[in-house]
Every structure is written in C-alpha cells, then in structure tokens.
Amino acid sequence: MEKINYSKVLVWLIVISLLIRTLLAILLEFGNDEVYYFQYALYPSFSYFDHPPMVGWLMRLFSLNLLLTDEWALRLTSLLTGTLNTWLIFVLGKELHGARAGFYAALLYTASFYTFIIAGTFILPDSPQSLFWLLGMLAFIRSIGKSEAEANTRRWLLLAGLFTGMAMLSKYTAIFLWMGAGLYVLLFARNWLRVKELYFSILLTLIIFLPVLIWNYRNGWVSFGFHGGRVDVTQGGIHPEYFLREIGGQLFYNNPFNVVAGWVAMIALMRGHNYIDQGKARLILLFSLPLILIFPVVSFWRETLPHWSGPGYYGAMLLAAAWLASKNSIKIPNLIKLALALALIVFVAGMGQIKGGWIIKPGDGDGFFRGKKDFSLDMYGWRQVARKAVPLMDSLEKQGILKKGAAMVSFRWFPAANLDYYVARPSGRKLLACGPLHRIHHYQWINHKRGGLQPGEDAWYLVPGRDYRKPEDVCPGCWEEVIPVDTLPVLRGRDTVMYFFLYGMKGFKPCESFPAPQAN
Image (cartoon, rainbow, N blue to C red; front, side, top):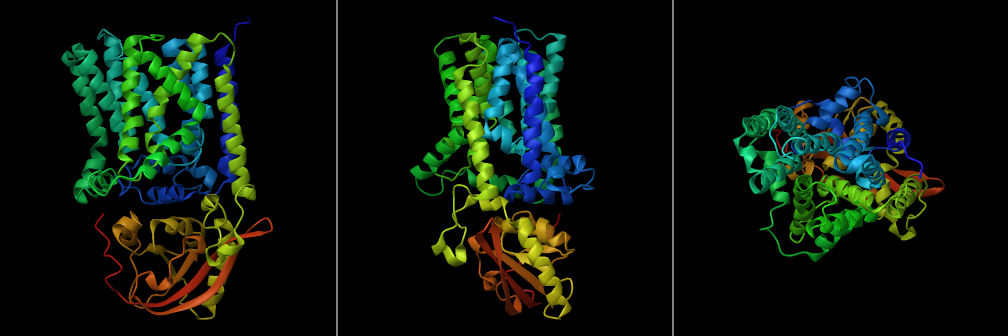
C-alpha cells in the first residue's frame, strides 16, 4: 500500500475545516450565550458572574480592541483556536500511536459537533478552554506521563501548570486537568511527589488563576456560589428525565460514532489491551472519565448541559484514534467515515433549519407565541427586527411619544444581550436588565456601569413572543405608564416565524424591583 503523508493530508483537513467554520461564522447570527459574552469584551474585568474572563479578553484582542464588531470578527478566537486544536489533536495522537493515529484523531475532532461548532465556531468559554486543555494534556503526557523526571520532562511539567492555569481562566471545569494529573501521580507515579517542579507547577496555576479569586473575593464569592448551586445534588428530588437528556446530549454533541469508538477504546484498555503505553493510557483515562461521568450523575438531581463534559471527550477521541490505528491498515476506517457523514448531515440540516426552516415549521395555532418550539430561532431574526424596530423608535421619539434617546429594558440576560448587540448598541441606546441576580446575571454589574435609570426616564421594551413577558412584569411598579406600540413580524422566506412586541415605558420611578447594582 502507498505510504500516506499524514502531515500533508492534515493541512488540507485544517484548511477545509477553517473555510467551513469561517463561512458559518459569517452567515450565522449570534446565539444567546455568544452575544452575552460580547458584554465581557465590552467591559474587561478580572472575572464575571458566570465565567472567568479569558473569552472576553481574547474576543477583545482578536477584534482589534473591538474595532471590528461583526459576528465573524468576534468569533475569530474560536476560528483560530479550532484550527490550532485540529493540529494539536494530531500531535497528541501521534504521540500515542504514530501519525496515522494523529490523523484519525483530527478526523474525529472534525466530526464532533462540540469541537467543530460549539468550541470551534461559536465564541464561548469553551473556545479558549479547548486550546489550553489540549496544550495542558500534551504537557502532562510529556512530563508525568514519562517514568523519569529528566530536565526536559520537568520543563514540560511547568508548562502543564501554565496551560492549566490558562484553561482555568477560561472555564472552571479545567480544574479536572489537575484532578486527573494529581490522581495519576498519587496512584501510579509517586516518584513525581519528590520533584519540586510539580509544586512550582501547581503554584503557577494558582498565580494565573488569581484574578478570578480576587474578583470573587470582592464580590462575595458570587460566581463560585452560582456554579456550586448548579451542581448541588442535595436540593430537590430525583429527575430521570434530566439524566436521559444529559446522556442524549453527550451522544449528540460529541457524535454518536465518536462516543461509541471512545468507549470501546477505553473499555479495551481497562480489559488489558495495551495498544498504547500504559502510563499514558492511565493518564488520559483520568483526564477523561471523571468529567464524562460526573455530570450524568449530577443530572439525576439537577439540570445539566451536555457541553459541560465536552473536554472529557478529547481523551476519548485520542484513545479511539489509537485503537483504530492499531486495528486497521486502511486509509480511513468505516467508523470514522460514518462519523464524518453524520456530522455533514447534521451541519447541513442545522444550517437549513436556521436559514430556511427546513425541518421545524411555525405552528399556525401558536399565535402570540409563534416560534416557541423552534430552537433555531435563537440564531435568527435579530438583524431583521433591528431594521424594523430602530426606525420606529426613532420616529416615535421625534413625535414626543418617548423622550429622545430612551434606553431599552429587558427582563433576563437573554434576550437582553441579543437586543443589546443587535438593537440598542447600533442605535446608540443603553440597555439595562431588570430582575434578580439569578435572572439577569452579569447585567447587574453592567447596569451599574451604564448608570442605571434615573427618575423620570423613559425606556423601550422589545420582547419576542416566543419568550414573552408582560411589560407590567418588567420592573413592576416602576413606570407611570406603559404604552403598547406595535407588533413586528419576523419572516423566514415567506413564513412569519415569530413576532416581537414593542412597548413604551414612560416615567421611571425608583422601586424595589430594580435591584441596586453591586460594586465592581
């Protein structure tokens, strides 16, 4: 058989992947989470209510200090990290079982909805975390994954601390890297306990993570409390439906064929089939299994999100690639072909649904709440409604219906962030979110930075029917008058897929329902 130059083929894979992801980044409007993290870039900080600061810092960096604010520009971080990650997963696979395993790992990475879209196209904390997680894995494998603490392996251990710290500045779940490495040292490589670089590496991680600790200390540990509450299994009863949703989500997000291959490869290792070095295998299992398994357990009691366990599947991909490389001499195994085919079908169908409504159609009986069952509308219609709402608000202000330059208000962090990016900011208005902290998230701090609302101010309330809240419930008791203004339809092709409702809120009066912003 003709020998394949896997490095050359990898370049083509990376280029094709980047082109597809760039096209998606240009064509797709922001989702709820993405557009919310734009506020991180607008207001640089040591940390935020929901997450550490890395995603905001990098968004600001790669958009040239927000000189460029289109979706594609703000997604540059994801496009770049996704490109680097495809190469990194190849390097990791090659480290385990040669270039063929590396190429298989890159193909599996490309076939994963989580890595290709969520972390590799959308701008989320997962985007920078994915890069630093893979770098951290590589550094740990090249340090404690070796039996001897030589000069080179000691340097890699310090780099592991650096990369893990950067991953933790991206997302809290990166602590699982140190948990996996720590368990490996305690169980299988205690000689590393006598190596001073291990402790310097831990210290380096803590120093890098220090901004998050400082911010939380200044704000009553509110972020840690929020995330701790999300996984607190002592509250509420057992919910099998949460568990089934988590399992189904993990299968879908990571590609069912990838998941099956990963589990087969992991089980083969645990049954004694040593197709890679035993020390590296143990280390990768300890990076992967705890994160993959913990959220299904938590989901028996609390609602979880499938992408939380996403980084755990990097190791599963690597083991699957090494296992397939040890079993096959063909160019690309059928299982990987099936994974790529399924990914292509999902990507095309998803794009068709968002842009054309191929699968889910608006229900004629939905009326006021039209589009409520269509999740794809999270990423559709915001530009369109802005084109309709902004001229209308400007015109009514000229007529004196509301005061010129009136603010906008919303009831929750989304759709507040969507309206902020697509409607308020381009029209020169401030947007404020009204409600308790658990509902408005970091907008409680943003409200403070924007000066809140002054007595007598007017505001616009624009709300989608598919996520409707009555205007009277937005800062209840805070307005002298609420004026229904207009209903704005959003079209997809010839179909009206949802409605937005515009209200004028006149004469703000300070009240208890508008919480006082916390100090930064």
